[in-house]
Amino acid sequence: MKYLKFFIKAIVGLVIALGITVLITFWLDSNQTDYLDLNPSDLDNETSVLIKNVHVIPMTKDTVLRNKSVLVKNGKIVRIDSIIPEIDVKVIDGNGKYLSPGLIDVHVHVWDKQELGLYLANGVTAVRNAWGMPFHLRFKKQINNNELLGPLFITTTPKLTGAKNASFDQLGIKDTKHAHELIHKYHEDGYDLIKTYAGMPEDIFDVVIEESEKNDMPIVAHPSFEVPYTYHFKKAIQSIEHTEDIVQNALAYKLDSVALQKVVNYYVEAKMAHTPTLTIYQNIIDIIEQKDAIKTIGGGNYMNPTLVSLGSMDSYNRWTSEQFYKPETLEQIKKQHQFHLYIVKQLHQAGVQLLCGTDAGIVFNMPGYAIHEELAYYLEAGLTPYEALKTATVNPSTEIDLFHDLGTIENGKVANLILSDKNPLEDISTLSKPNAVFVNGRYLQNHQLNQLEEKAKNRKTGLVTLFRFIESLL
Image (tube, rainbow, N blue to C red; front, top):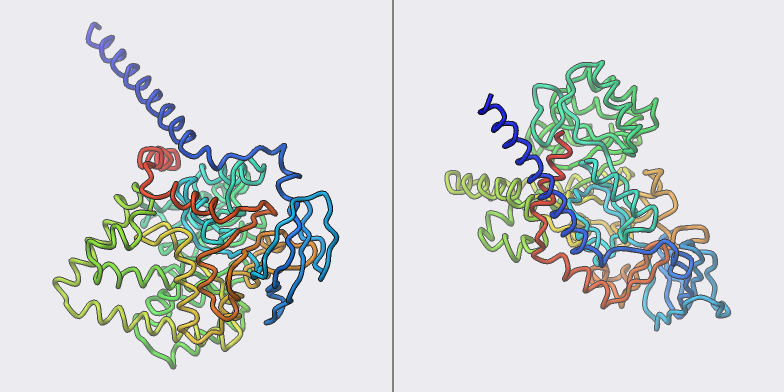
């Protein structure tokens, strides 16, 4: 009995200590991120502006509307004209710079609040988070309530797979009954979309699609190897992710241009959107070529430390080891990357809607910065600057209902905007260094963007991220 009492006291003491540790950790995190806190009562004053003397890139077509003024009221664009009389709102002189829609990254993995600032610092004013956890629902609610500064935020469920493929980062669905219950629960919780993953078997997938349509939760599909690639061309699926999986799944690892044409035809017939995420595959090349340098200059400085430890270093060890034992690895990966560019060109020429997504947040793939690398690859694939920019503006707004009010500069659209020094239709890289960013009409000047970037550098968020992981597992 004496030992039992001692054991109980020890357990209670450990629980109390853990509880105190958790509270202190989240309190410290809150203090470290208070620069992103907003006051909802200031909403009207902060989200109404008149931007004058700008050249507008409307993205409704490949053109520039020169010497215009744009009036924003309560976060919405209400007038675009040559001259708009100054009214009782903040007036911003664009000084002949270029105003274009904010960028949309449709495939990201967000791990902490600092990353939200990183996206804004890079002109990314909307994201589709593709690996949902409970804390993402809190982020979304705070952003929607104008309590937290960040891009427009929508999120999928956790990554769903079959029971035999379950792991700490993939939730295994046991059977069809479990699938019904799980999707219903996620809908009630407030997740916007369903994320299916590589090990999803057909019987479970059929139920997920049924529940997707019933609950109006479109599917973001990482192609499953448990079904044919052609299975994914379903109405319930919003987009198919990862060009590399066209090679590895649909083409069985063959760089076969003839077989590719059949896949392209399926995309066209199904009117299916595709998210290339070329940057994440290029990161394998960067790991092999840069070696230890990638941990700092390659993105480590702006990565969540827990994800570097749990995921990025695993990828680093895998690919550096493989290159050591198989020296031909690098050349093979480069050839596949070049074929990815060819696939993107073929999809684009066939009229497939391409959605700019980066897989940022994992494998040294820097949040915010990655989108500019991704867009550069689309240019390399043969798209024009206007066509490439559409993948991160217009296309997401037409393919993803929750982004319907974004993507162009027109009356009634949300004022998510980038002010840049040069014309992005001539030099798309100018968007990587915004002069200013507007999110929901809120004006973020250059020095504020620099602060958002600096605050996210070498951040200490490892413990709070670990607790968020544990919460999602529980």
